[in-house]
Length: 114
Image 1 (cartoon, rainbow, N blue to C red):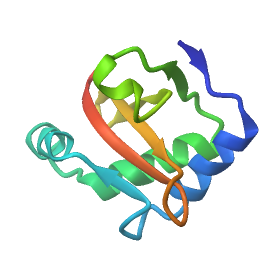
Image 2: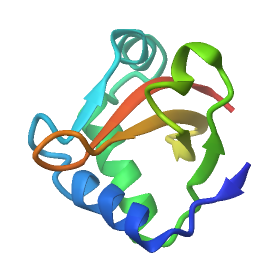
Image 3: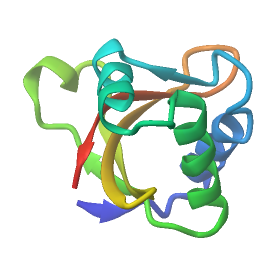
Image 4: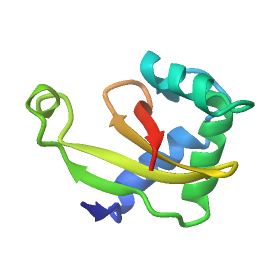
């Protein structure tokens, strides 16, 4: 696991995350949405999207991890991990970056306590 430092990939993340208010820029898998609703009280996907955006804008780390799981390797070469404080909790957020659309999309595939 290493810190994401590629300026081109960071720019794609920022393009998607800066548009967190609008649908289609940050997409969530159902299991991740359900975890947030069950575990993070007043938070929802939009508030977490905003926290991820602030994290990256503030220079926070995003880990770039080479994808080794066979079922995902063909889709994505990497996944990107955030560790954020949400209220009193620290959460781990696993994302992928989709660049096959008109603009980049961050996909939240998993979220849980650190």
